[in-house]
Length: 225
Image (tube, rainbow, N blue to C red; front, top):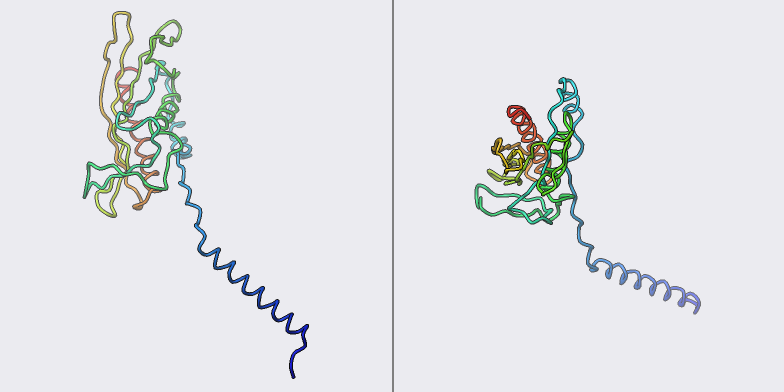
């Protein structure tokens, strides 16, 4: 028995709708996907255990210090890429992770962390590298200058890597007749990364940064500052 005209029309409409749906799905499958957005990192808060340990040690007030702007001669001021090196292959080549960025250039992140660490037991004045020097009770504090020389995730092999931080610290006394060098040294810290990826490299760099800052604070204490 042949189908009625309304039935034929209904079937035709269903087939047409199915064809349109297939074409729409096929079209969606070939549309370009939006590019993945980079993950943005900073150093995060000081870990509670570290903060508790610092609070447990009696804090003797230290002399005020002027912290000059941290410089990173090997990095552009706008560089925020998380960098890595393949020390086992091309140790002189620095590469950026494609989808990992710092929220600020590393020099600024280090300056924030250093200012916070120094500020636990002293007044920290930002500046000190210009002509107008900040003063505390009429006295010009010593100026701490820091250069960030290395700040990268270094692979010693395909699976073995560390967060590598090296910085040079210089302490000077600003006097009318000129600057007096009070001390200068270089600090290096290498902290193991848990896995060979950007996220682990960032965590290792954060811990290495905290290590060099702790060593720098001990050095200042030895200099009486």
